[in-house]
Image 1 (tube, rainbow over the protein chains, first blue to last red):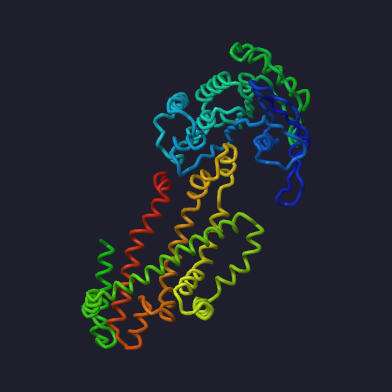
Image 2: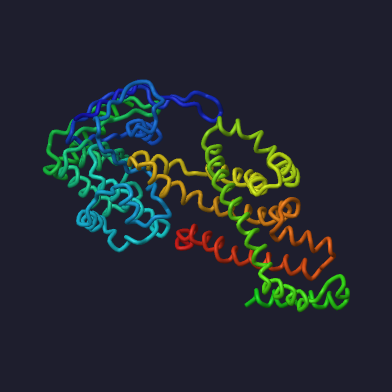
Length: 236
Length: 245
């Protein structure tokens, strides 16, 4: 099971009638069990790319072969919860097969236990993001897309959730794609890092990280970050 | 409490007006109440009320169901909207009387003609309201449902209907008040029973207490249905909004 991505070009017509090219060439493959991290400047087309990979946008040149029959889960940039359903119902609607035991475990990890019966409108953005994560985790996906799931969370919580994402990824052989602004998240979580150019997005580098995730010390992380910064700099 | 006070004020005004105008033109509340009680005792009031309510229920259900489906479709599909729009504008601006008279001419003075005519009158407003509702649907939730592979039934029940509920409630509210008005005209013109028929009789006999007795009984029923059915539905539909505030 693998994900093969070859997006040659993606453009759209903006409100003023001009054709805007968003992506000008992104190709990579991702194996089962791998976590790819997509890093690129703000507004470069990362979210557009994720929408294509999630099958939400078919209007592009190229080919994306999703693993057949793969169960997809996605954490969008905004939580995208159903405001008229409780936190628990939001998760259960996306993951009807989830057991009470697993749900309790996920809510425990994300510290949502006390919010089960709240409506999304009663939650802070940070909490709502955690519900969106819980929903994606509960699905037990084969292909997980995380579009900046840790943005706008405080550092302590972000670090904790990063650990949880790492645990989940290790617990199931799935394909994971994470979009982030944070080099720190990228080198701590990624098996491979895809550096994108500014708009129209082009794949600059695909950097594999050979050190296993669990063994990445702060020193390793710092060295990897320095290495990435150098590559980034040399291209721009 | 404030409502009761307002109602009492209305009764008092009526009483004073009746005293000034004289009971030939405007009978006092007590006279109207006496007629209403007599009609209720003979069973005629309930017979006519029942006939009218049955027509309202049928025509309302029919037009809400068809109107909601059409409106939703027109809001979601540009082609459907282009195709349906001229019809919609025609129906919206067609006077109720024209529809009723034509229905009676083409389908005879039958129950089917009456109900169809009432339903057709209400249909376009339901279409317009639900079309707005369908246009206002949040595409980001559609995408969420698509990503998580929600089956159709779950999308309808948990994603679409909660978003459409305020529009359905609005269509029901405005549609019901329209149906209340039109049903009497349809009955007056071509049915042998119902509140509209009785009002027609009272008009011909210039029997103002009878006319008022039927009109006000009808209005009371409308108020009760509004308070017991329509308003609770609206509140339930926006329960999550209230809690969020």
